[in-house]
Length: 463
Image (cartoon, rainbow, N blue to C red; front, side, top):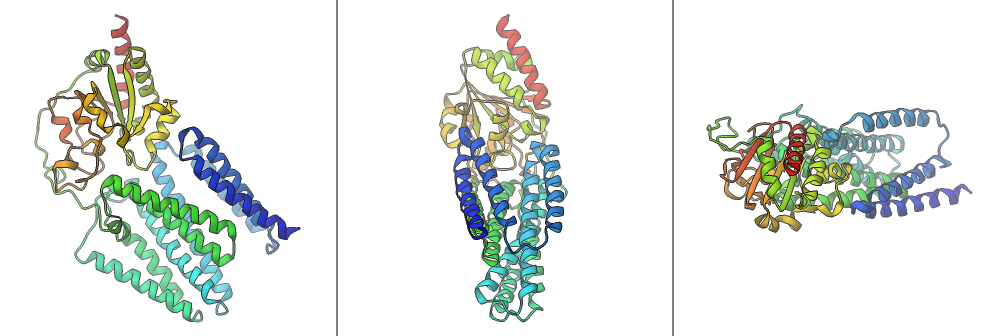
């Protein structure tokens, strides 16, 4: 009976993973897709636990309880603003598990290991430990424990490539002769070192791409682990994860005008050489407005595009911004939300926040869908977004964001920017948008500013 239960569970898990992945591509079906994926994971766990090779459940149960407790606490207490860091940690934990399983498989079965299995173990360990340390580095940069700016030195790419080549060469030698146990720690240590070296030269502005790339590496390490353990569920889940992460990395690279080859070798995200990035900021006048003055302009607007950014997430202002959109709509304005592919600090960050605030899906448009409409828009309201609206991406060749497609908010008749102060964005680049004649700066916490705009707009409409 066991010979039928395990394959059926894995088959059900694989099918539900595919259905879940398809479902989460659309906001309207995302919840059902996630539920399907969760059910698929339940089948995968059941299929694994009923495996006849398990002889003792004590350590499995202990690990299950501890892991579930940690996951539940993270789900409850980690705020949406820290979701990119949490995802980076998840990648790190998953990759570490793959690396440790590969290590255990090697030392338990060497030297009687076939060439194919040894190749799978080597790939599993390489990608596992590489992703583990790389994800920890990404976490540190996102959480600002480590410097967000690229750390570069002469000959860095050569050193990185040599480290990877030596690790791969040691792995190939192990495939040929698994009995050379002294080579295994070399593979593991060099892979872990390469993970650190891969992320060091990458700037904080490029972390969304790094997150998706590490996601791909974690998936590929799971595929290798599946082949090493002859586990079909791991192969299917890892292949889906790896391919989805790879495709998302390509999409992110295009959105940021980055070369995917450069991403693979950690040679992008160069530092900004402008005076602003060096701390020499010239005092320049800006036009500022109170919420009352801004509300008077919004009252006469017939079309408004709201551009959310990381500042909105930090202030948890999504519900107040949705209330502002409702007031504008009741006043006869067309209100839409413009989402840049890398807004926030992870792909889809802003979409999730707006969905949480019950913003209608048909009001949330991607950059390619809405960019041409800014020129016919009365007011572009930028809430906590910086780099994705910065004209330097078009004009400043020394900028790390040069060439990145941006939201063309400067084309709107009036631009309102809600921001705490004049500090540069995550890429460390001063935003020329703030100094344009058509731009009004509304300084303050995004949530409090939104509350003020709602209050003053309602008062102005009912006056």
